[in-house]
Length: 522
Image (cartoon, rainbow, N blue to C red):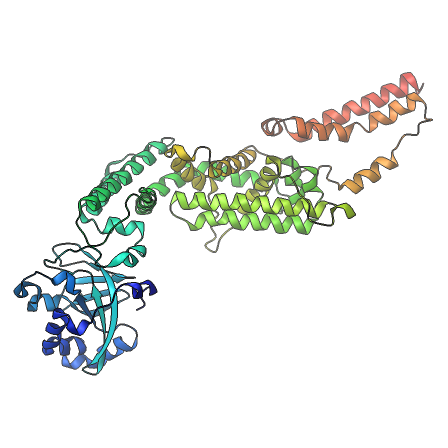
């Protein structure tokens, strides 16, 4: 068992001058019983426990906590038995000689089953003692695990507090903790989840967490303890976040199963549309990026660069399936957005040619870059399966994040909200069926310049031939203009292939008309 090194900064005391430890040393029979692991025939078991890092533990309340208390109470055999622990063969769990359960967690000892009062005692000092053929671990506490004690300022010192997490404040207030879990379980048993009204559930969960935090703050403000607690710095923000995460983790099976069922139809359609868009079971990355109106500097990149960057974004989005609480999923989604911005910068730099771009250059990352990358990543991620042969249900995760943001007004204009809007747009792109996978005009700038030069019209060419050649060259520029002008919704409502046929037919009609009327063709 290892404790944090910060404990060493707390003022040490001579435990051999501690009246409680002196009393423990006088109880030879109790120490022998603990050393033998509960009986004379179990010495081998106790030795094995000690060698495996689970030796018997002696808890010693500090002298300050015993000052002024009658010896008949604080030094009774009952108290001694309550402070001698044996391992329960579960990491961190112990049982005292009175059969009561305790947990030793980091720098704290927390009472459990069998105690009339839940108490969190901070470890201020650690020692070792070898006796009766075995090593005893000695923990000096800021207060006894049971019974009366004397409070005094500065007992455990701020070093102990520095290692106390925000959620431990809830554990230190039994009234708030019990009331919190009662409300959570009552919510699970009585609340009716209605599809489309998940925001109301998120608002209620936040209210339960806020009520628990308010109870803890009142408890700590009115409590005369030797451990000063910085309630005002930060002003409850950390503990609110942690308590709300605990609430969502407790309700995960209740909430997320509802979201999975609610979004199953959308996720099924998403998978079906992406499967129909693939050609021979494979997705063409460039085709997807072109259909998503990716800028030219994205399409000009090499295949290996595009593939590597999109796969990296897929891995980031796949982290959504490894989190339970929506705030953790929001953090993962925000991290994916930041990673996407870095990837786009890398792609744009790789697509640049010429000596003027050999060094570090500043590139501009627009919403079109990000959205196109997310569209491609969603397609690849939805087509993948995990080790359990199960696809990630993206719509369920996005709905889970959305209900959390809806209950927090302060997140409405955050980076996380922007990331959520981006992936929602990517999912909206795939919400419409793409019945045919067509290769669009995807060329590098060099290829485009070569094609333009091959069809370049000479200045001496007659005007009629200029019109004829120009009409034939209208198809691709008009198609590129349509990609830029039309919004993504129109691109999905009207099939892109139909637009291409219209533009191509118009160009051929213009050529035929010029050939008949101007050039004098049949």
